[in-house]
Image 1 (cartoon, one colour):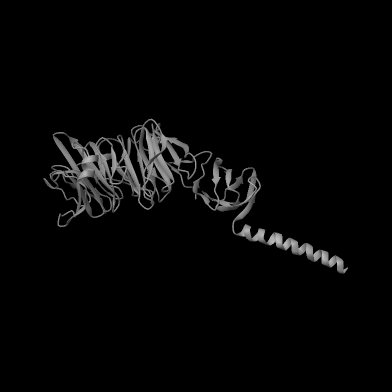
Image 2: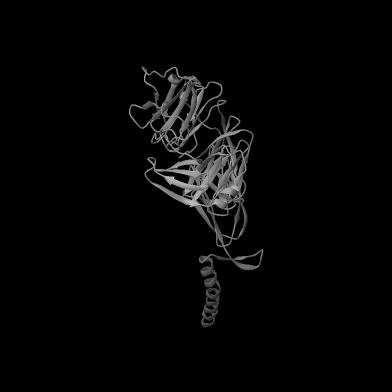
Length: 430
């Protein structure tokens, strides 16, 4: 009996001496890699989805938890990850797990097998005009301003833009000039011999509509403050508005910022050599402010420049920009491509999608998902931290019209091509 006890004591002591360090190392993230015959640190994969509650498959194994979840203790290497949820398409991705690193896939939008299309208005419309960064968009059944209506997404309410006794009911609309994150815009219409510029503020009740045709003698103008006068800004070749400042690029390539009333003016930076190298003498530039020290310059021919090396980002053809200031990411699009530039890392363009006739883009979940229109077909692009982006077709939209995405409702609004009714699709299924 004593001999048996001694044998058991030595066995348990040996197991303790062997297993205890192994358990400690495993808790600290170390594991034995049988393929390399060495001790290595593990990695993990974190997955969250919209909607939540998707089943997780790692290679052929069904993980016990549902999204959101973290799969820990993985030997570095490549794994095939699959998310399954009833009523939705499979989401698959090849994930590379690295030692002591987390591979995070946040806010994966699960794609329904059939998109649920909601008809909002059964009238026939000809165009949708988005007001970026607001809860509003405009829709019209003719080109005359009297047919324009304002749709407020959060409350789902629609109202005529003009009162019934307005003198501008028959004004043909040519263009609408908007300012991002503002319910204020300028409508340009009429004929060449009778041009009209109307200032509209949707934040007022009733809507504030002013005829400012006599004020506008020349560009540039600031629609927020209506600070427009002849020769308001002279000898400049670049202009932009950010917060309470007007930014200008003068003919000597210096950048200044000033208040709308010109009471205060400060130099931002002056670098004649930089300006002479990158700026064209004959081009005019729109100035965008990404941060207090990061500037973007968009020329009339669509060349995109910055004040940081390599200075020239895109040579030509840029149609539009969407800034994500929190993560220093810039989304841009041309007719043939959509790209992303990360200013927090090495500044270079990463092409997300190549198309044929891209006309508009909206962030859905910044900075991981993008809605875009290519040749009257609406797509959702999911930007992956590893591998190629996922591109999903959503629906067709009316020719020569735009679309609108509202963060508050998680829905995209568009004109259906056959009926020209106003429809919506819920992209974020919470």
